[in-house]
Length: 346
Image (tube, rainbow, N blue to C red; front, side, top):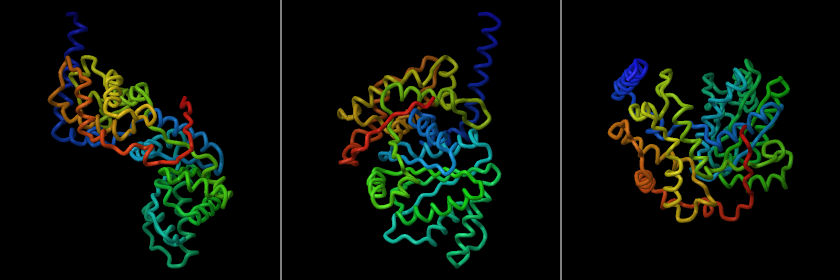
């Protein structure tokens, strides 16, 4: 063995030891083991590209509908992380409306003020509340003169609430704040979209002139890109320089193991448990996250220089995740006619 090879081996051993020394305090909080990893999957990249393209236009909006467990929450987290890299010092807020029979503007304003941790006493009058919300949002956005306003579970919004939000957006726009409203909702958002086009076309045009499907992972190449993010595009703990994969399997990683190499086996394992549904429904990100979590829980014991995660291991993880008894999206969204359109993320 050459001197360079010996030095590389020693360095690798030092990294493995350094990582394992943190396990007692940090292993349980690993994003893959908690199921909350933010990964730049192909659907997330497509959504981010579309949102940021729209954001370069004043008073713009973009809307997405998604099947349950598709990963829209992870997408929102990714947008929050990526937005400042594209638009420095921008404001970013996320609001999740609750389902209600009768909307009230005052209640909407109070919910939004609560979401942005407004600490001043909220005015009793509707006019006063409006003024407080407008100025609070202005304060959040003024430095970068840009605000991303993301609404999760947007199917719970009433048309009246969109009208009230339109007024707030107009108020900010007049004051030279560029606002991008991003709607994320379940399949019911499609019915809302169709209804608004007929009854309130101004609101439809403003907030969801085009409704985009936030799609699932479609094939092995999508899953490979997802897994590659674990290998290369992530870091845990912050500032360490260690990727998600390296932290869980440090010895195997040092000897060339990469999760991306498991993509075909993982996809085939999903196919075997899908009951024939994978070709038209894809794989929702939540199920991939579940499989990674279950396999990752055994990482400390399985880490070895010659590690191979077999298809049998992936199949067992998928079975344990209850993927086989899921409700297929096609049943959850019966009658939906909107077709997805894949976009190149670039």
